[in-house]
Length: 503
Image 1 (cartoon, rainbow, N blue to C red):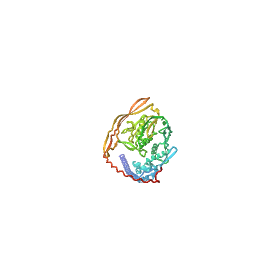
Image 2: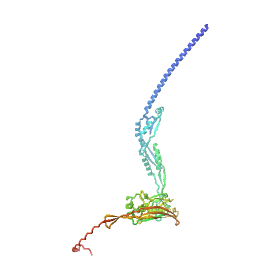
Image 3: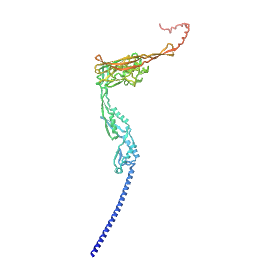
């Protein structure tokens, strides 16, 4: 019994100690939880404070340039938009203008000052771009830029006058270029005198302009750019001209009855085309060779066809030169590219053989189809106009050419008489001269060894007729006044020996 009591007491004491331990453990846990909550609250508070501070810092820099941003070595950190814009418009623009580079051409150097090209900055746009750098980053990246001062150099964008850049390049070319010189040829007696050609060396202007446009936006102090030269080959070489060894064709028309002004124009126009060299494949333009037809250019007034009349105009007679040249071109087998007949028939050539010109609308053009150059000789002596084409005779291949026209119809004009009461009876005035009209067909024969091997139609032309008009007088003539009676002769005065003629 005693033993059981002792066991019971021991059991009670054991349970009582366990309860105390359990209670103390519970209390400690609650205290820990309380302290943890206090810590979490403090951390959260600190986090919110830090977050608020970061937002404040970011907000303070929102309208300013982030640290480390510079332009042409100028630190822009912390500047506002107006401050950046002002700096760009003053100090930076002046710095841009002082930039220069050196263009090297062989052993010569040419300086290009950027200020001479009138550089222009879009300061507003550039300033806005500078202030916006980094503003699209997330918060952490923005803070990193603010606190670590990330270095960033902004490239200055500017425009300049391309016209002045091209003018600068051309100024270099004017000092550097040695242009090629064409060979020349002149008829001398039965032969020709040929001068030697010269090759040249010229600046590659387009290439230099392109290179400068590439370098200028990133121009660095002391920069140099090497320009290249190319060989300038002459268009006409002496070797080519020396191939001209004989006459391919010639044609002559007469203008001996022309008025003085027309004679002058024929001879003057002939002198303008005389000596023209046409290289293989080149096209001759009569209007281009003659130039402006004006009194100032040296032409005179003479009769020209205007509508259905012959009227006075500058350059009358030019068409006789173009027509004579046309025939020379046909007889040498040039390739006719443009030609038109007159509206009315001309006196110096049969219908179908002429070529009217009136710049810039009507022209005579022909192409040199031969592999060697041809030379045009033209001259007038106030009576006859002759045009010859010279070239390499072997190019004819043994062929010769004959050109002739056939009149296919004749249109006879009528003459109308109109009464005119301002003219006396028996008087007549030709108001409009009658002109006969024609239609024609022109042929060219190709001849070899005396035989016609080909006949081709060159053109089919029509020339209008012009009906004449004659004004006939109807006004009555006034009666002739009666002759007065003769007066009695006066008595002779005595001769004064001092005034009488000798002998």
